[in-house]
Length: 379
Image (cartoon, rainbow, N blue to C red):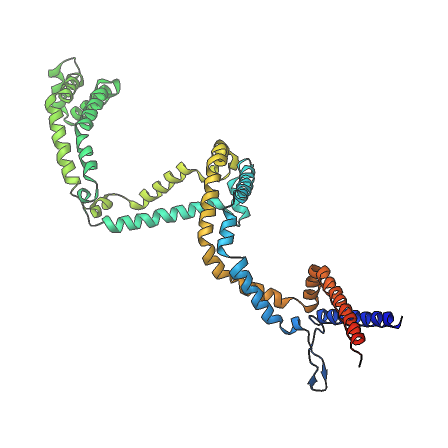
């Protein structure tokens, strides 16, 4: 009976020692959180292992995450997964749908992004752009002739139009002098001419007779305007003038014109054509709704693919700039030891408990083995 109690006693003592030793070892991983001193002498094994090696632990974890866990290859692989691509595309389509059917105007959107008075500012920028472009073009062409600065095909087409222009002038002249207005104009000019000659003019009127001199002159004018020779003469005159014009330098051209007025008219014309106020005060849906299906079926899938491809290419450089290892290290170092202990214990609670129980079991077995040895080989 004494043998049984001896073995039991030794087993219990061994189990207690084993369990307490393992529990103490686990606790010493974190405790004490800070170094303990007796006077100036630091008590050994203080602070605990993890608080003491916290910086090194943070550095190693950061290195592991950077080199083995959160790598460019793993992120690129994740980005190219069909499920993630589908989720990104669905989100983009949902957001696009909201914008496409939105009643917000472009001016409202610009207002939200801190761009007030959009119409005024855009008109000012447009006018500034026109001024700038005009100054650049003027400086470049000012010393060139019209012939040198304009494309040859433009000049050829303009020259080809000379016969048409002369025909148009003669036709309009013929129509005018054939009209009542033209007849009245010739009569008034004739009367004024004869009145200026006094008695001699009256004598001419007497010689002509009852028929008005204007009625005799008008058919001759029309005959002159419809004569082929007149057409050739006008063609030649216009061609000669055109040859002179294309040899002008732009300095000479601008002397004949007010470039300031021309610029103002250009600004007014362009502004009227663009009608920025109307454009900006239209709802987004007015412009986007007709293209909704194309945006959803074509544009967004293409944007998703191109976006993922470009993002995947930039991941290595982005990862290098982010310095994941440093971020992880800083975050772990910022944890309080108490919080770090809570996290580890919450994750490994069951395993640590099993380690304690295993220590008690091994200690108990060792105690029993010692009792057996002592009985087999008594001193």
